[in-house]
Image 1: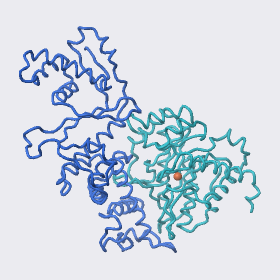
Image 2: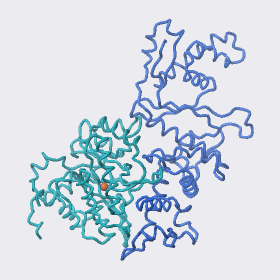
Image 3: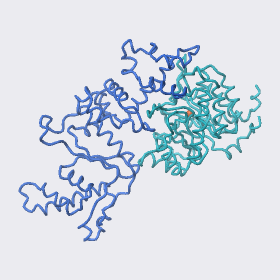
Image 4: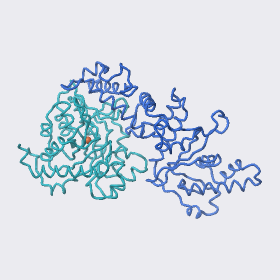
Length: 296
Length: 291
Ligand SMILES: [Fe+2]
């Protein structure tokens, strides 16, 4: 390895030994100023008349953690409101150690937070935290997903009648669908009106009955390029139809599939399903979720 | 000094872009509502490398009314890792969309072994590093089809194996790779404080023809060292160093960087007016150069 490569390897290794706690919560072995930079790196850095090289190297190492923690705070304000600053800091430092950034933009650094929280004790003991992270990451994805011009209701009305027999729908690229077992979106709206750490995220479904309802279905989407990201909950039949439509199922087959959701006692399930499918389509068009309806 | 053609401020505005600000999302609407207060904007390239959404919407909109330059933080021109060609392709695509007056990044490395440390880390000023950077700048410029600006960074450490001064290294890169220089006057001040060199000697070593843009920013003085935080107004010592720079380099397009603790737009406009004032004073009193 050349001298330049060795230096960069040593510098990276040093930066990545980011302390697991902020300065005010460190044990004596972690107090900045203690000789903890590796000898090889220390040997290549000079003291100044004013400061020891350990302090100066520490500037980079502290800034590395703080910069990434700040990026996570920007991406996950609801998670911060839920767990509070101290636990957020601990979580963020563990995440930084487990998932170093591999992307040129820090925008993508936090992409694995939800999976990390769901799989890593002790964070996995608070399943609402991983769900909040999943929801907030989806909001972020919708925020800067590709732009698209939504279809208007007039466009749909103008379709020739025979188009409906083969009609397939395309959705705005920002559209995301989540199944959440906690009242995460409701709590997220309250994130700024409580003390950090005090955000309450109650269950949305019976937590003791995992074989019952798997969760509440949510849609997230953005219409115009500069529009705010929107979200709302859906019923199970709408979630099913949306998934099927995004999978390329034609409109008559969507109607057929919907009839399985017809309420008990409904005599003409076909008529109910056709009316429900038309209603859902109208709602999606009105919300600006659909970009194309192709009869091919 | 063959390059030191002194220009008066009238031709300077025609020559250059004048006085700009870093484009920050907190100010998008105010910029649109109060046009003409700023001559140009510098957009952080990585912030606009998204498929769509509000950031690109605003950049597309504002670039119709203002000249825009692109400023990147992830080129990692000094890294031993291979050049990130997918990053460069995204940068080139962004440039095709935005049509910036120029593009810049930093003379530093930002990662190693595929890990992006998201910091501007100083290089050792060695012949090895010089050859390495020069070759990479040439390849980047070939790929982008344009000349780049490289910026001097603030640094907190100095390496025992450096053979050149920071300014000699910067000038050698610019001359050998045929790239231009984005001179960050605050960074010169910060590094001069940290490493106890003469900031004026730094300015005197830079060939004026290479300097196409100047950065100004605030910092945090910790007593034993200064950290380049971009979260405060520009300090008086940096203003006077800026005056020296304008006297030496002429009316180089100048902008103020604020990345944290973002103040109201009006506050930055007032700070930018101060930059105009300092530059005008510097150009009207060239005799002070000799003082
Ligand atoms: Fe700068």
